[in-house]
Image (cartoon, rainbow, N blue to C red):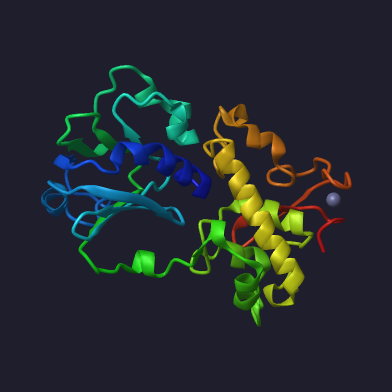
Length: 291
Ligand SMILES: [Zn+2]
């Protein structure tokens, strides 16, 4: 599943192919749960518009359009946003790379999974949204229009600070790990980043959120930003929850301190890493370093 770093890597790579270009024609597949805005309205609403910027909030990509309005894209589990003729397999999720890397194959032709095709006035490369499992989302917002999916997103994980984490955790009886994964508090934190940042901060994932100190909140926030930035640097693609057959591909795999390292020695103290389940998600921690 694309996590925040993977979405950010996608944003950085696709932005130069989108921003400043006027959309000429929009082709879609037929209506499905992928389209929060019906395809016919999407086609009408996007044609003739210029993409002014491409931002990210949590795991959502937000393309601002001239005259206001926003094209919102979520990559879901297997979504791929790429330009015609793009050569980097890094644009793809681990899942997709394990099976197929369409844009790495010369002469990729949009297939049944290519749900959105944007062609431009400048007749340059088209931009495709391809999603095999269709858990992604496409939404077109009118100027000023709001949507609960975006409204309920918390602060972006790359911007999170100890002070806001401290405020959010006061009087909370749930595990700190659950708070970190709550997208309405912090947008974009996946399982791996939560585990890694808690290890960096020396806080056990089961600790009651309300018992985490201000100083520890600072350390967790700093740890989160550090692991997210680092995974963006390493390309993002191979460090999601999903580890495919090609999982060893990303260098971040080798940098994991606790995540999915059950029984392996803690990099700080060599105690065996433990695994527990919190809120149906597996959590990994060092019983000696994390209290
Ligand atoms: Zn340790």
